[in-house]
Length: 169
Figure 1 (tube, helix red, strand yellow):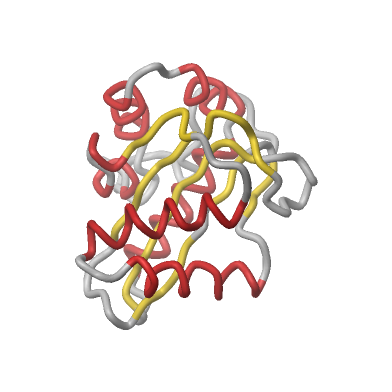
Figure 2: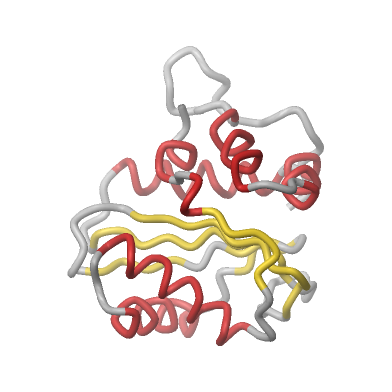
């Protein structure tokens, strides 16, 4: 299984979340991630906001991967949020975002963290994958979709990790 599929459980997926803007979205992600890591919402929010100040984590095509490295955590945590309405997120293509993968990783990078980010970027680069995520009605279906993505870090798998759809990020 790929690193994103390994990281997210059904409880880590929220669909059609109603948030009006980037600040509220980051608050929501921080709350969800803090609960998983047993940290305070404020600590996680501060880290996510600090990372966003370095540059938007928006990828384009309605996708963002807000993430932070935190010395207080010793394990990776992630959540997937699909918003009810796309919100401005300073993405490079200037399009609003509705698909968010929020991540917190330990301060010291390890190979698995890099694989996680690479896999996520490749997944969200696939137009068919994004469209399917937008059409999912249940967190379980999203989980199955994320889990099914091929793991390019496993020997014998395609080096690109590309799925069946069209890449355009």
